[in-house]
Amino acid sequence: MRILISGVCGFIGSHVFEHLILNTDFDIVGIDKLTYASNGLDRLRDTGYADSKRLKLFTTDFVHPISSGLSDEIGQVDYILHLGAETHVDRSLIDALPFAITNVVGTTNLLEWVKQTQKNLKKYIQFSTDEVYGAAPDGVFYKEWDTMKPSNPYAATKAGADMMAFCFAHAFGLPIIITRTMNCAGERQHAEKFVPKTIKSILNNERVIIHGSDRNNLSSRCWIHCRNVADALKFLLDKGVNADMYHIVGVEYTVLEVANIICQEIKGRDLLDDEIEFVDFHRARKGHDKRYAMCGDKLKNMGWQPKISFEQSLRKTVQWTLRNQQWLKF
Image 1 (tube, one colour):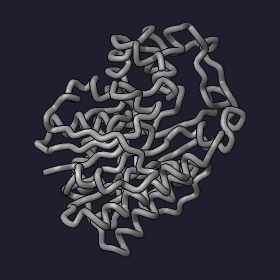
Image 2: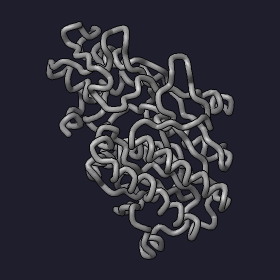
Image 3: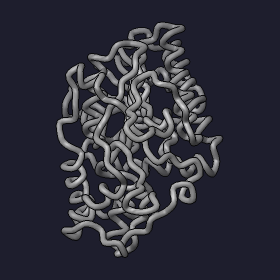
Image 4: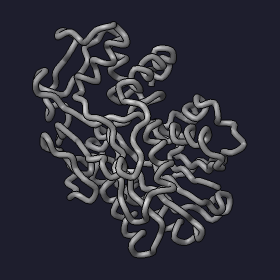
């Protein structure tokens, strides 16, 4: 079997690559733009499998149509995991256009290439985010196919990409499914993200930025480790039904609860009041959503759920990062 992974050098892509190398005999074709988010090939090298004979890697930018020469080099594949995207919310608030071009136009280019060339494709997974639903009121967990109300440019462009994927499944009968997941954590994450940024602040004895007005009014997210996400994607390559959607769900924590787990691993205790800087939601980020949440019952009822708890995974991630602090420098 041959599988194409877009964004293979990115944070989540590198974990998916590693998981498939270790748990399948697939030959893997990787494509990546090698932006700041991929940090070159460092993430793939860090897995220890960048030189695997099962990997064929190409540098390309799918905001342009895939060339005939590259198409010939890729050849026929059995599966596609479309993970490549612009993903940082704050950057999308500064300039939305690169997100529209990469996430909507780029996804459409890839879908057109699939339609025209991949006659034997078994499954294409469009990888998406919980943010397309917008803010979730307390106690609400969005289900698959609930109304999308994205509140930032990144989320809006991911919603657009999802709908392009769905229409190609519907109009052309392509074997496409959509997955949506939430805040991912794990080793090799870019230092601009919450978990490594918090680790870095605690190590440097700097105040940790927490979105919320006080300990009783905090942002919350659902969290999952990338290895669990990779395992769910592998499961859905076999079990997913074409033109359907699946939530890959972890567990809900406030941002302070996550920061306290990190501090426990580093200092053996929770954060003290004078180590926290509470930042008002909307002052920190225009259009900030206090809470995101999705229901994971559908995938659970199919027989999949995370094998390792998020807290256990997060503690291991913190310890790994303490041993590999070069990943906090970017």
